[in-house]
Amino acid sequence: MAKVLVIGCGGVARVAIVKCCQNSEVFTDLMIASRTVSKCDALKEELQGKFKTNITTAQVDADNVEELTALIKSYAPDVVLNVALPYQDLTIMEACLAAGVDYVDTANYEPEDTDDPAWRAVYEKRCREEGFSAYFDYSWQWAYKKKFEDAGLTALLGCGFDPGVTQAYCAYAAKHEFDTIDTIDILDCNGGDHGYAFATNFNPEINLREVSAPGSYMENGRWVEIPAMSIKREYDFDQVGKKDMYLLHHEEIESLGKNFPDVKRIRFFMTFGQSYLDHMRCLEDVGMLSTTPINYNGQEIVPIQFLKALLPDPASLGPRTKGKTNIGCIFTGTKDGQPKTYYIYNVCDHQECYKEVGSQAISYTTGVPAMCGALMMLTGQWTKPGVYTVEEFNPDPFLDALDKYGLPRSENRAPALVD
Image 1 (cartoon, one colour):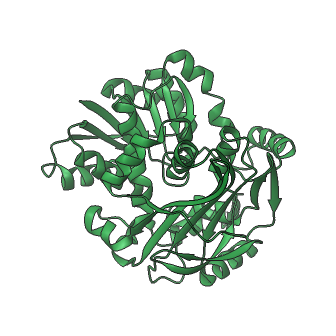
Image 2 (spheres, rainbow, N blue to C red):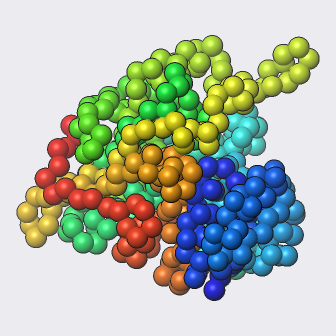
Image 3 (tube, rainbow, N blue to C red):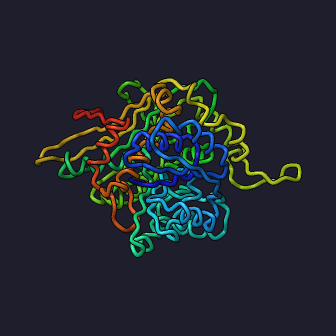
């Protein structure tokens, strides 16, 4: 029925690709493309014959628009699924426009070089005008809205879990559970244990930038920024237990604030253990989280990229990781004139994920929604020209697909609230 080009071959890509193959009636043909084609070939060899989906591979530099465009035109997919790095979102979007193909990704754009003068000027202007200083935001991709509209193409941004499913939860709550929503708290708990003193569950550069940035939340339509990790709460998560969580800046707050302007407060919390925080603060204090190149023995290196090379590969954590994740949204508001609270969430087991697809739950909870987002587009349920985030589409078929393909929802109509 459909051809999909998957760009990237890491842990998230693996999950998305396996899930596409499990749905071979829709995903009849699939190409895996990456800078390191040997990874693509190995995954093809592993999967080909187990599923009906026809798999091919290709080498591509996702930083090169011309190379990407040529590959997309030659393969002629119905959609491009970008599960590469957020650094490459814009080049892949440009190539999709040039080739006339719809686009899906799992995380919004951020620059690899945060010292680039042209980017820095735009960034500092945004900090002054918007009031938050995280390196990642939607403005760069939202700027493509008219181009995609004029081309009659759809670009779906941030279709992982958070961002992604959490926004679908918000759309679902607004559609079915509330007349008015007053507050949204997004809670991301990873109760998994991989046995290492320090490791990150996804790309270390992206993970450590996110965690070490100042926190921020939206209140009455305005950003409130706080020092990194300065707001801490404890929450008792279903099937995980009590965990410390910290308020972070996260991309879906920006889009939810835009699409649900009447919500009075939107916050994001993520759990961290003390050992992780101690290691991160030490690394930050000695400059290892810096993106500014330094000269070492006549060679230029970027400290955080060097750190990435030293840390365990997140894709290697699957067989070691035990425990569960719990990610969802708590709402307060009104229904039929009465106050109401509501919590919708998913619990995912690391070991069960590894048994099924060979990846831990962090990759699974991102890769499954990526496949489901592509599924929504290929089946005509989420198609309109322009650039959109998940909450701008009908959440019902998407959540039904998540229920079916491994991320079933749970609900609590009397949850404990976060103060």
